[in-house]
Image (tube, rainbow, N blue to C red; front, side, top):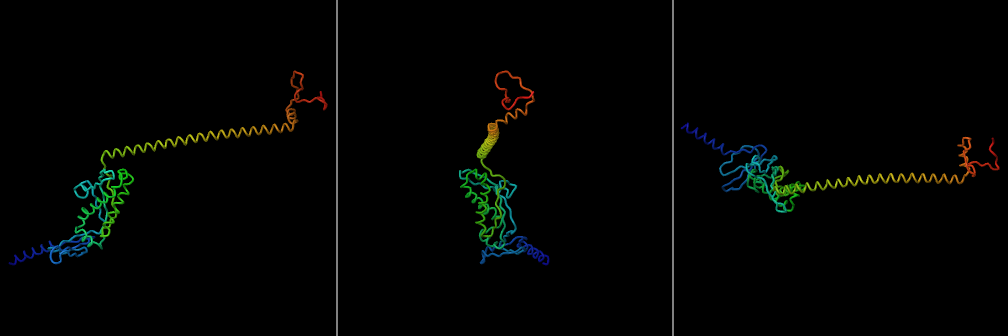
Length: 291
């Protein structure tokens, strides 16, 4: 009897332990009554170990930052394809790996459970993923493929983050960031078409740059030629003006030319044949040349 009592006590202890559950540190627990008169009653629990009992379930919600990625790879998240597909305005399908970083507001854990009736894993895998997918479908439906794949990619995911934040923020899920994981996946023919257009645009820009450079060089040469021509005109005008001034001076002072010739004369008469007047010498009434 005594041995049987010990076994009974041991089994009772094990059953009691089996009915206990733990709320880890950094989590908030919600104890939910499934049956009986108080069905649906909720009790919020801080970190610790609790006796749950039959007819109750304990859900835990981490209050620290959570990061989850919905990818095609079986090495991330769950071992299934969780990537998200959506369509552009032209009806082209785009597939993407998307990540989310968020945390739970500790003061709204009960409200979150009342809203979704699920634990944090189910909320992430089902509800948050569906919200991200629906937001992508809505926001991308008005964009062409080049906007989604190119410069509009960042603004697209920002719009998705805003949509999801507006939906889950009031119930206590604080979205910190939604982001692309890797490159977007497009049909191969679309990728080739986009790359060809990008290459054509780059070549056109290169040609424009070459034309602009050639025009700049031609303008430089033209400016240099105009500068040289203007300089020559200025020099010629200066020389003409100098000659004009010199001629005016000689006309006003006719003796200057004769004085200049005399100053340069070496005393010897030039050899001269003819009957005209000997240049620069006036042998008239003013005197004669001394011998």
